[in-house]
Image (cartoon, rainbow over the protein chains, first blue to last red):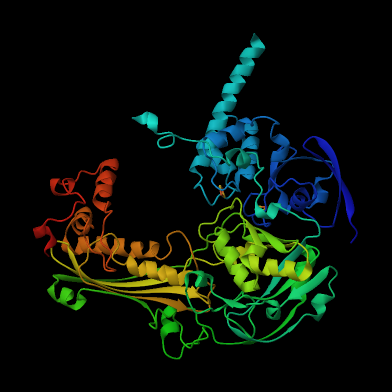
Length: 168
Length: 447
Ligand code: FES
Ligand code: FES
């Protein structure tokens, strides 16, 4: 089977890649586009380490043939990290030590971002449900859940500041 | 006073924290080098078999196939990881010559231009194997007539000529004769896979006159030295670069991927990547060993243990890796943090046709403590004494001699239990609340 060109949006920029048939989005992001924050824990949909956002929703890039994202919007942690400083979610993970080895962290943070956009004040049960597809072998999850709670709190504080700014 | 402390009591940001939360940390498998080849191995589908033949002809025709590595390519093909600290004999094959001893044992390595080509070629290697009877249970492996896994004729690691690590201290039979109660228990644990989220792997890169190996090993010099022995290279021709380990828990201290990847780089002159997939990580990487622990305790009516006889078995699988060392630790810890004046331990490292076992978090000690602490609760129950009291009465104090003749100088069990009781709001009787780890007075020392 011949290679094909697939075009999609990556971090707000258009990309075109020549891919072999059946290549997964994970493979293409990691080996052709240098987005190594997309991890490779299992390639079978079992760990969540390869999570990316597809049109804003978390998906497992190891299960997605890259042809399926043609014309769509893909976001990885590389695309979200500011030049200086950290996002609210990253800051919360850093401050709460929501990681040990760090291998699950990019996936955890992307799931968190999508959760907080959908539900800015999640309960612990909401958080556990959102993270249920992401495996962490190091932390025992407690500090990760604390990080998500801290990110939610920081996000709502920021929203208050923003709305106060708007009314002024 | 607090001003002199800058770290203790502070919550400090980790030096690698920003890299982790931004996803910029580079793990071994995130690296790539121009011209990099992919190494995958052909694994035994049988638990125990003679290798009659390996036919590579169909594999060689796969587009992208570069070359195969067989046992004939390995300069020093039989090794033992702990050889570096004097453990003998060498017993594990990098690539076995005529016999496989566990399911998943590598037989031939394939180097190919792409990972897909490597997998395809692996699938096309024809193996001619003759299945042998296999043994998976330690008691069966020790029984007469069992299939023999090792090359020296029995299924135990030999400790200075003995089939087990032995501890002899005092007179256990006299202790049992004096005891008010005899309590026996058998405890079994299962193998446990570390299952790190990042799988084991390395990339070996040839450079002028030497090889740089990027690896997620937990033991970088250990890996370098063993690779140097296996490949017959002076250590100064190897440069090992460790990095962030994406979860290890002891599972990344074996030296399995680096020798083959470096050999591939030697034979091809190109960078070689050898990274386990998830299935390999779960099925062929070492696990914690299965254990069977049989304990017989002689106990006085007040809960004091006066004699303990232990037989411990650890299943090292087909090759012993770090398990002989685990067994030595087990033998030294068979009384736990408790003073017992008469002790007899036989601890075996038993070979079976299961996946080789190795290090994992407190290996050798952890499962011993599981058995010992359950035994302590049974002693409390039998004597009709509170489980805290039984532990305080038997706790090591400074100056107590352990069965392997080490004098206790850092006893903290009593103080730790007192702190634990406070934390969980458990009131201790005055007798226990007043105890300390200070050396026993002369009359306390008498039993
Ligand atoms: S790598 Fe995609 S779910 Fe594990
Ligand atoms: S921090 Fe290691 S897997 Fe989560």
